[in-house]
Length: 350
Image (tube, rainbow, N blue to C red):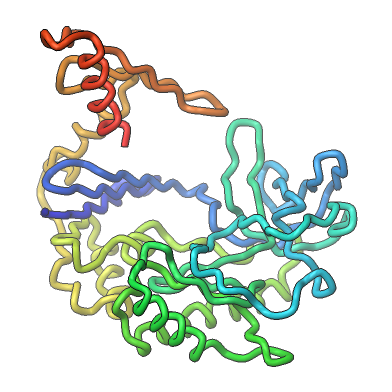
């Protein structure tokens, strides 16, 4: 299988990244300047709603953010001693606690300043959803400053490899007070077969990032942005660009330079797979990606057999209607026609 990543940054208003496998578009990422998910803010509690077990926070955006009681890290008096093996937990912001949730009125007060991370961006009339359970993903590890355990991605299924990675990570964690480490870590799938040196390098980067966030938060008035989530190019290089990718093609000389600089840290051996596109036609148009995007964004999407999908997006959900259309099936009957149409629909939707 040939896997390619295309980075389009010719429009200053947005960046687009397309991933193709054997010439077929399988992923499309679009980022505009207003992206807030993953960013960390120093917020101020504007209103506490006991009936909803939540609070509204001013974080410096147009609309107040929404903070559930279950997304608040409890105080030390509510935290059980020690940590548990969270080997099946893959981490991420907004994790809900498994312990009983303390009432919102006992967790925050109006006017209180709180450091939060955006876990869901604003949509329609709703503001962002935030959490005090902050997580910082690296290439191999996820750093969680308010946890005290080590977990391993469930996608790493070899027991020996899971044990090896967990031992390494536990050995390189810095100790905190009372014999406990002062942060938790999740080992990402990308860490499989990686050396202790590589994992330690990633951890040092995350520790440095968290130290900078804490230092800035200490002097930043609320409400205000403390940490802007990393650029789309950085995240793609960190999360997607690996040994299974044959080519990374960029249409911006500046992004090409940045990619080489970032790969000095993330993967020096991959630098020869990075290419700069300098053709006359726009890159997405030249490689046929623009046409694929236009087809995928239409309300009606045709299937190979002649059936089609109708896709409608509402605020609460996306509705997909599957129709047999021009496909009349074979002599095997209606049920087989329906099954074939649905199977094609599953592949297209996925």
